Amino acid sequence: MKKSKKALSIILTLFVITILTACGDTKGDSENGSSGKKEEITIGQINWAENIAVTNMWKAILEDKGYNVKLNVLDMGIMMEALENAELDVNLEVWLPVQDANYYEKYKDTVNFSENTWFDNAKVGLVVPSYLNEVNSIEDLNDHKELFDGEIVGFDPGAGTMEVTNEVIQDYHLEFELLPSSEPSMLVKIRDAVENEEPIVAPLWTPHSVFSKYDLKFLEDPQNTYGGVEKIHHATRDGFNEDYPEVSEWFNNWKMNDEQIGQLIDYVESANKPLDGAKKWIDENQELVNEWVK
Image 1: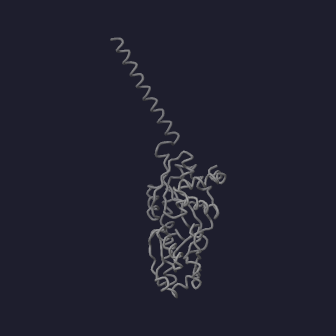
Image 2 (image 1 turned 135 degrees about the vertical axis):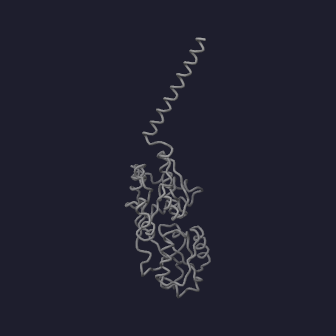
Image 3 (image 1 turned 45 degrees about the horizontal axis):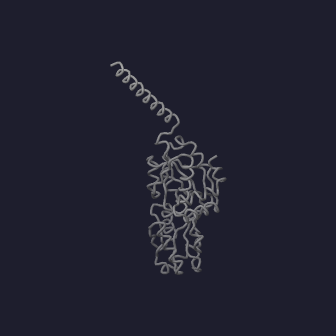
């Protein structure tokens, strides 16, 4: 009987120690901000070449620092709603002052738009193949409406550039229809047209790898509807800066030039998996990345 009581006492003692240890671990996790919720960062991804490149780059950088990063593929409109509703943490690509001005005006009071920019030499406009010598300005398009079948080949309908392109159609009184699709679909149509030396007009932007593949030219925009030089910002949900001050600082330190983003896009597109291409680029540009995450 005494042995039985002694065994029971030992079991109870071990049970209490286990519970106290677990409580102590939980408290430590809470104080260090390392709960599962704290560790995961959700970044929105749009199926645009440069966006796929930078989202995978940051996924690789942050996971190397111990964060769990999830990429959610969304269009721009849904992404901004998700940021407002705190269903998403980060959108890495907001073009200002023109292309995404509508989203900035709508969400500026509920979403944090960075003052810092990560790319300062972006350009947007309508492009045609360079072999179309007679078409050099948006003002030339109506004179060659039949050449293009009255169609502008577009991409994601929720993109700010698509909305600006509709403004271009109005400003220049173009007798053209803007056809929404997706960026991959638009790029296939551009490829097919160039390979067959056929006419095509589409809204495009730099940085973009398509300009290294095909000889394209931007049409002059005398009314400046597309704006001049665009700068690319990032946006985060309300409270993200407080929850992840270190990551917020890294995002604000982030800066790339034409050569760097061009090489990153090329590596990501050339790899079997985008993340592998991003990691290769990081390995070759570790000194630059260290400047961002210092």
